[in-house]
Amino acid sequence: MRWVLGVLLAGCASSALAGAWTIERGETRTYVTSTFTYGDHGFDENGDLVTVPEYQKMTLSAALEYGLRPWLTAVVAGELTDESIETEVSPTLIAPQSQTFASVAGGARVRLYQGPFWVASTQITALSGGFTTAGDGKPSDGPAVEIRALGGVSGTVLGKPVYADAQAAYRKRFDADQPDEVKLDLTVGAKVLPKWDVIAQSFSTFEVGGDASHHKLSAMVVRQVTENLRVGVGGIATVAGRSAVQELGGHVDFWWVMPKKKPVAVAEAEARLAAHTAEQKSLQSIFK
Image (tube, rainbow, N blue to C red; front, side):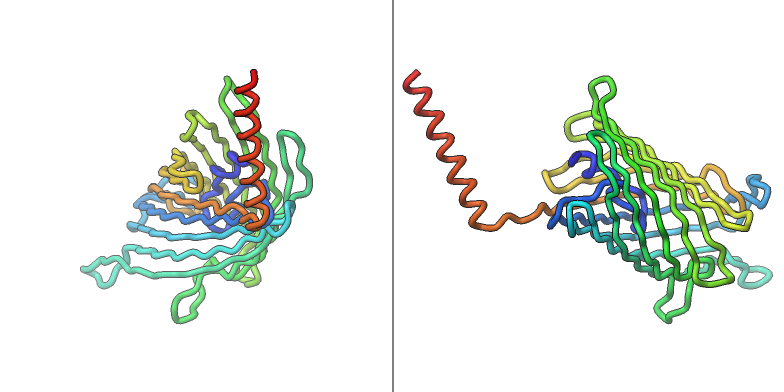
């Protein structure tokens, strides 16, 4: 399932970036995503599209996953977000007001069961929430803990490798004034060419005990540049929601796989065995 691990991306740093699969012990995966979105419309409390002040957001996120055991993967992530909203400065002046927030997260993903074509796992993550350089918290994004259930399948359709991943999460906020959230994320992808994948994703967030929600769709193409490096380019849009901005934009993704390093003695032994095998095959061809 290594080719599945190489292209499954959950879209944000705090999510399970390799999907439901865990990675090999000693292996490291690094993910970097840059996203820009814009919106001048939003969804009101009834879900109707209305005009809102111009909104722009630039996000740079990074995450690192490390295989502690074949069934256990550690996850750490960070995110830097710059938001700009048109604000009335005076009765005759409207100007963009910008704020920058950072956040960090850490947790672990545990594989519960793996069959020939599917896997089930769970992930627990602690999130700092957004904060400024002065230490002020971001409204509606305070500290939280999240538990996530993940399931993934892979197979072949019309001779092409395909894969799907489904995740459901409950995010518990520590601030009593901020509502908890339920998240549902879906991913479907296919390897259309030996080094090219196409991926479609959906991300839904529901406010617990409230009316706010949003539903985003994303599509991207992924190119395997080297054995270890993959690059993805895609678009993202908020297609429905309540009390939410309709964001439209794109993202560029880079992820790097650093395989487990073999001990020098093992690597040398494997090299000697390969050389010996090649020599035996050449002798066999001579005496045929």
